[in-house]
Amino acid sequence: MMNSPSGPQPRTDGSKTKVKLFRSVNAVLLLGLLVAGCTSQPPSTTPPSEPETPQGRELTEVEQLLLQAETAAPLARAEYTLAAAEKLLQQQEYASAAELLAQINPLLLPELQQLRLWLLQAEAANALQLAEQSQQWLARIENPRLLVAEDYRRYIALRSDNFRQLGDTQATLKALISESESAPLEQQSQLADEIWLLLERIDPAELVQMLQQENSYLEQGWYELAQLSQRPDQDVIQLTEALEGWYSLWGMHPAATNLPQSLQQLRQFSADRPTHIAVLLPQTGKLAKPGRAVIEGLMNAHYQQLQQGQSPARVSFFDSARIEDLQQFYLEAQQQQVDLVIGPLDKDRLRQLTERPGLPIPTLALNSVDSSTSTLNLFQFGLRTEDEAIQSADQAWADGHRVALTLTPATSWGDRIQQAFNQRWLTLGGVLAGGERFTGEKDFSDRISHLLATDASEARAKQLANLIRQPFEFEPRRRQDPDLLFMTALNKDARQIKPTLAFHYASDLPVYATSHLFDGQPDANRYQDLNGIRFNAMPWVIEPQNPARARLEPYRDNTRSRFGRLYALGIDSYRLIPYLKLLQELPGAHLQGQTGRLSIDLLGQVSRTQPWSLIKDGLILPQNAEQP
Image (tube, rainbow, N blue to C red):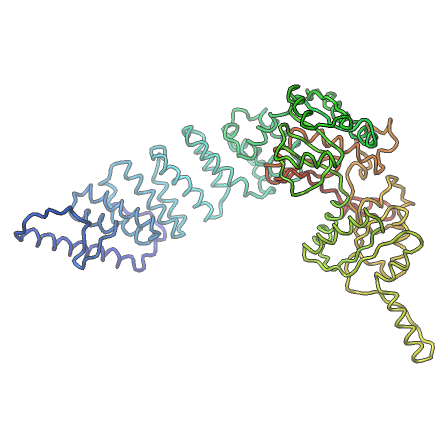
């Protein structure tokens, strides 16, 4: 009998007893059969039943196999024992399986069965957390190509799992990549999946080190593919460009025909670009001015594609103010082979679309009315100020704050923003300690003193003075429970609010604000009074140097105003076109746009995440950036 590999042997506590039990059961059964054979009984007319022990218990599959092994020829005995051991492995009786396997003489087995023996011994050792011993068994399989497909899959899985137990991910990768070099086509897809699963678990810093090693052609191709997908800051456009760059270098690499599913989706959707776009926006009527601003932004992006040598889609324009029947519009659009619609802009027409179960042409509406709408082929992309309030709540919570005060204008839009913040804050589990609404008519001090309870502190001091009838030194105190203030205010109001907070002893209270305080004029003198405030705003208005905005600034003087955000909406609507379905279906996918970081949920709602800025010494700096 061939000796087992050197190294630690599997624990067999209780397993010898189990195997001896199998032998004793078999011996008793054999004796019973012999006795039965010596008696003269008439032949039974009933069909044979499952073998039973003398006690009447049915034999298990393992016991039946061992019983057959006892009376079989040496080759058959080894095969029956091998099958019994595999059953024990399936039943997770790993120690018993290991002992049975150790009793098999491999010289009695044909070559393919020998390979199966080594594989089962490796599986048993692996299950007993004996990875080194498992690797020694696998090393006996000199030509794994001889294994049947299912056993080959087990072989590959064992190798990678052994290396995982040993903590050697790089060795696992190199082994799998080496195997893939000459693997049959039907096995390459399986190997590619194994390789990619390991690559996804590798830390980016470790991957950089691996790329700097002396790698084989196959290894380098896999590592570079993994690196381009590990950059969380890149959006779908950058990832698509990086993937095409990888293909230009590694088109003959096995990974090129066995891409991970997420990258396969990226290539597929990139190829499904629309060829004819219908722009359904108002060009006359009360919304003509914002409609034209969106169109200017859209065409800005269109001509930018032309300048880059790309072939943009054909664009047709329809005045939504003159279209009364949207159903008729879609029929005509289908006849003109339109494959995507941008618009409408007004909420009334958008509501008409949300009342339908689906649309015949994918449609990117440039507004939003109902976040729970599930109209098929409808995407809603708006610039709701409520989104900034929700993002403020998320950021403040992430920064560790838990008790909030709010200060907002006494207007309908101010109320919507306050309500959005409050709902999100309570959903996160935060505490709302109070809220005030200001008119801006010299009421800042009154509203803030009431919000911070400094007026109550002064009232208590007056009561005490009246009681003791003696002068005493007194300094009002603000309430200490809140740890942040959420504020929405235009620039002229914000410049009065922040100093008033300091006057009421709240200069150290963190303030989170919406973009309303930024008026598009990054003058340090105008923002000195706002030092310390954090606010979120779209890249279009907040970035000092913005190439897309710079292309419009020679012709428009309002690009950084609140109205100017409509230009950014037009640019992003055009850039979103090829990626609507991809962003909706690919988890974590996003597009870095002029209006923020864009993603799409399963209901077709486009979400915007705007970058954060901090005002320091009158300068507007990216969040956490230091003043140069």
